[in-house]
Every structure is written in structure tokens, then in C-alpha cells.
Image 1 (cartoon, helix red, strand yellow):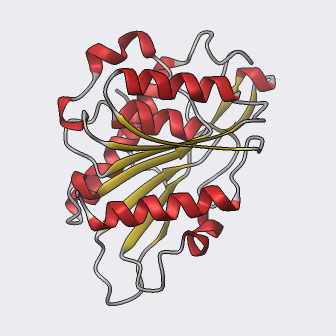
Image 2 (image 1 turned 135 degrees about the vertical axis):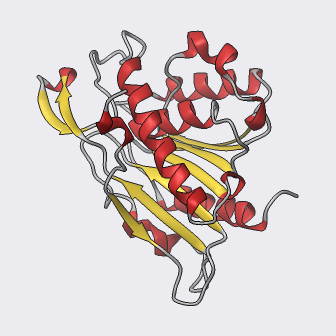
Length: 231
């Protein structure tokens, strides 16, 4: 593991208003070619209110050459070697990003937020990392949010699963018209997770590789449940 893997990624951070104690941290990973600002504008649309006790952390992926885009250097959590996302996943890159995500979890722990009050979230590539690490994290998490994404490294999934997170709530949403991470990949991930016994709250919308207002509202409701804690 290189020293770069251990360095905290630069993040955009949106915390509660002054005087409001943080009750939940959401570490939200962007998609390929985007950055930590990508999902900041939706925070007011989540319906969490002015007294929201959530700290949102939006890390910036490092810029690397992306094979499928002709080697162009861009923010990416791992390399994409083929349009068919089932072929030759960059597991070394995925594991490297998982280490960087773990460092952000540890920073929240150091700031007084236990893992059980942390949600791992991600869109597209970011969702791959959130699922990959969340299912393997050694302490219980508040939840995993996987938007327009898929599972990678499935051949090792069952043997790698953390017993601490076998009951972690999972929110999954996908566009039925998605041309980039096709709808079937999202459904396959859902079926795999259900088959392993996970709780999956599934949403689908007639959209492409994006988010929509209805989805944002559903995310807000799900986060309210995480704020309330286990039933």
C-alpha cells in the first residue's frame, strides 16, 4: 500500500448549522469525470429541514487515465477498461479507493461519529465503491446508498462479506433508460443482494444515467429513517 493510499482525499463538506450536533455522516462518492461538488445542490431538495443534523462529505476522486475514454485523465475511482462493465473490472483500483474511503470513515470515528451513524453513498462508479466497501466494512454502518450502479468483484463477494453488516439497510435506485450502467446491471445487483439476505429498498425511474426529483425525495425519506436510528 502506497503512502498516497493513506492520504485523506480532498472533500467538499456541508455540515449542520451552527449549534446543531452531528447525528449522521453521509460520505457520498461522485461518478466518473465528476467531482465532490456534483451532488451538493441536491442537499436542500432532500427535505431534511434547516435543523438537519447531517454532515455531508463529498470526496474528490483522484485523476487517472481511463482506458474506455481513450486514456483521457479524469477524476475516477478506478479504471474502466471496456464498455461492457462485466469485463475485466479494475479490482486493484476499486480496492485502492476502498482504502481511501476507509480513511474517511476513520476520520469520522475520530470526530465522534461511530460507524453505526455513517452512511456510505455513491453514484455510478462511486456506488460501486460504496457497495464494495460497505458490504465488507468490519463495523455496523447506518446504511449504504447505491445510485445508478452495479456490483464489481462478485466472485469474491460471499467469502468477503462482513458479518457486522449483514443487516445493513441498502437504498438502491436506477434509471430504466440508463445507457451507461444499463438497468439490467442494477437489477442484477439487487437480486444478488437479496439472494444474500440483505434488506434492499429498490426504486426505479424512467430516466437515463442521472437522478430525478422523485429519487431525491426518496433518498431524503430514507436518510430521515437513518437519522431516527434502528427501529
